[in-house]
Length: 553
Image 1 (cartoon, rainbow, N blue to C red):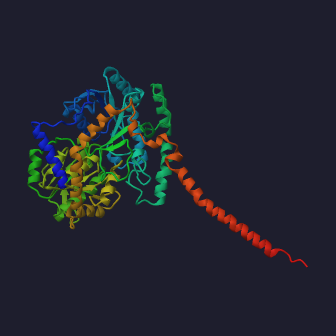
Image 2: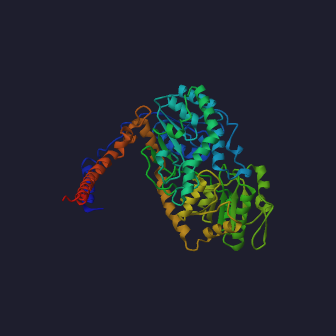
């Protein structure tokens, strides 16, 4: 700090002492109690918990917060006593597990979009009526909708003057994109076009949207008719991207977990917001970890159900590294799979390259001294233990943030959606290993071995860098999110945020892009050139005329 700054600080301190220790400060006088509603249509804890953590800050500032969800998601509100929880009805008859199974663990993106479309809109009319009832019985000042909660967003827009904020774990919106960024649902798989050939880029830009239109076009027409019948006039052109162009989007991410690019003024990344409290280690798991020093932890989140082939590839890679002494144990949590399915999902035995045979039944029953396959595990407790050196994950947003926050090296085995994007982004940054289901057993084992051994220390060095990144931004993420929510509450003009609207929307395309200036410049540069060309041409023509003029006698 410069000497002048120290002098100024000392002067302020002396002034305060002269006034009996009291100094006037700027005070916040804008705040008055408001009511905020947050709702999700599904997606599990990764769509809910971080927003509730932000809203806990909002409630602490004197506002009333209501969390509305279907019965299968209301349980997430129990950990937040300052937030009211309301049901919008029973769980949908359709859910993600209807198309995500061990037989379809790596669905094609177009198929997944079509299936997700059906799930998200299966109870549209009932959900819309529930939201309208909430609006009628509560004085709602602002609504926050998860980006999957279509009925929530429609009901808020139908209210005309109620501000709407959209939450997401990834910045998958047009005003968060760039020509070189793959952030729409159809181009997921690679974060940027940097390593893509021209034909792959052409396919993502032109062919995939056409294929999607062919696949879900009839569904869109039927949905538009259903919405219109429910009192929400809609056309097939009213895509979520168009409808959300004027709304603030709050994203639970940070550059590093997202490819760097400019963001629009209506996109704010506040992440990663992590819950304050986690389940502690149980006695058995704590004893297991204390008895080992190099443990790999495996978990694929709430929605992934790996196939037998996925399990055999990863399990074989684990036991081969165990056989070599690269690790001395592993814990595998099978949380997404139904208990009755676990026994048949795992093979009876696995044979390492040394021909040593491992009996999986002992791992499932907890009898194996070095290997545990369990239904559920306190993930953060395991990651925070010094014995855990690597996390084999599907690449979900929460799992990646938790691993990096605790400084544990990652191997990502992606299945669908944004998971392959995350795997490629972090593997190129040498923060994680990328294990693919399309690779051979030898390749998969080598990816795990390379991260576990980390002979040059590159993975741990980069993991430590990202640990600092995640810890820095997660510390104040909830506060920044609460600030944004209060900005919308008190600064919005009706349902709009005019101070965040891009200025170019109020200008012509020509003026906003300075096309008129370039036209003038072109004219000024071209005029002398054209004039000179005309003069030269005229001179040449005149010379030719003189040369060709016949001689007279």
